[in-house]
Image (cartoon, rainbow, N blue to C red; front, top):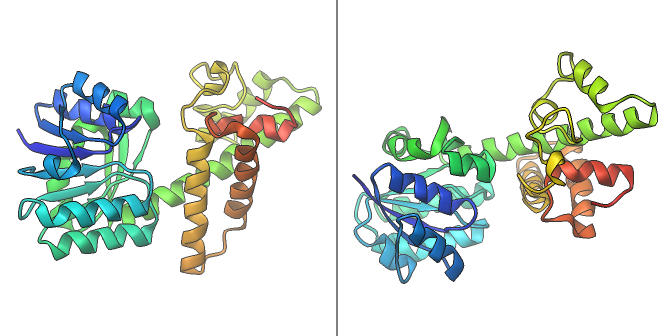
Length: 294
């Protein structure tokens, strides 16, 4: 049994914390939103008055926060008060530079640290089947892996500090691009009089096969579990996809990489988001390409 502080109990953090409780850990949680704290309490999390109180005596500190500036602010506050040798795991999706700065803050105070963003959405968080992409020293990852297991379907050590964030950004750039490609193909098929099922039956077993088609098909029917069958309720929201695509372009600019398809995907999702679709599933981009609204 490990004492874990969990800071950031939103749509992802709460089910993740719940799975840690189910695994027998003591979880002390904090969030700025009272409603999130109420849900956490129902899941067996011990709700604390503030982040510092949650961290006190914790062996492990997990953060799930909106952006790099929030992670760095929290780290600056809590790292000096954390138990010596504690493990910090940040599962937020943030920019690589901020992730590396967070590692530096942890090291300054004698703490182990791992950046471990996730893939799998709220469904994976609830089911304990998230994919964790971890960055950090080998010894820190070795400490983090058994903590992550109750929340994970797969855990990959991607490399040194910031490598987990780099993997997440690259993966989601591919996802955003591929979803637009699949959606464009279905829109073209509609114009050509080809049924959704016919295109799916061909492409899903041919060279057009990809996750965006076979698991998250953007039209209703061929994949019953896809958000297209639920009026594009997320899932993975447009606003979150846009955030990740922006991070990919910031990283590309910083690294001197040329990513024209990633840049175009970011622009298209920005337009779709600006139409008021930020809370819809990202596969709903097909309606933008059709020129219709959700």
